[in-house]
Image 1 (spheres, rainbow, N blue to C red):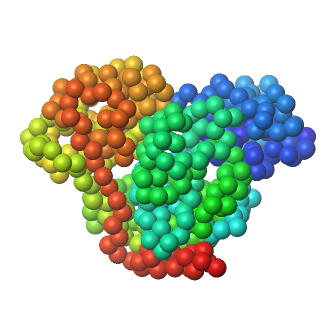
Image 2: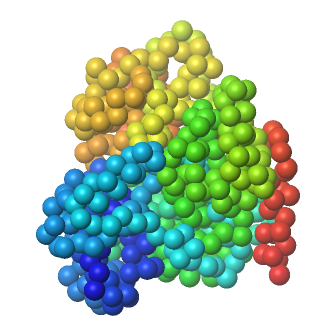
Image 3: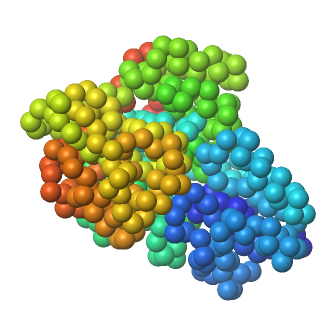
Length: 439
């Protein structure tokens, strides 16, 4: 029997286990390790999900304990199962594992992609924050306009009791509220549900697929970070970010996504330079010359209110994009610049866990990441917003922030949707999906 550790971040690690190892009598998964996401280590993968071979469940440890765990359990192999790391960082982890005496492997995508009875459109990316969410919304909008029922399945966000969230289904805002969601979950769920899509997420993506394909004509996979799809796609759309031109060939598994893509959307061309866009186009051509290449803008709108020209504003940005996504700013900053506002640096006023966030991600600029993975983090966010002197708060996160916190200053929301401006029409790429879904 081979002893394995699966190194992950509370998403693909559990999926790879469920698909490849849960019922394999020749493998013993002795532990998961966790990284990237706060508060998900030092827990258990529950026995009810782990299966009959694991009556006590499987422990989850911080990744920093890998050398000890390898030695203690005589580990033969560490399976790497999380996303959005530079290639060099992946190999540093491989070197650590090899030096500790174990092998270092990846799961083959073809073995972890589950097959659906319905057509699947997968939306993946080269980096976190590239623009997947607006792309999935646009794809869903086009399919709904064809009279099709759409189930949107989101990459795991396992911030709760894993047993209770094995399969999550959201058809209304009340469904989302009842799940006690984090800010990140709201960012991904609220707008698609408002558009008429049924959202699925959870832990057991085999069970999720069974339910989703039973009520939908088309399944859309919405990947997290730059992870690979959990479902075998009939159409794989990969979003590349020219604001981080070159990263499409430097990050794991974003480059793998790029090489497998049927279509590549180069987004944010309204904010990136022509040189950045051209760099991405050259890189796509170099590794996947058969992919259709689409150009798209991401125009940012600001909710109605008084002029902010010359006014001090606090910009709150999407958390994952500017933390492990590596961006110093996001849509909120774009909206502030367009309004002629003057962003206030929130770092001197940060409290609690946000102090740790700024220390851990020193690249973050004069913006506040919308960290809300727990009640305590949400309280820290509210306290920091309250303490920061400004005339208004610009929320670059795609949720109604005012529903979650109390602010002494008005909160101006931003919106951003995909607007194609070049390449073959997205409707043309979806035409075979529509045709199959109708038969």
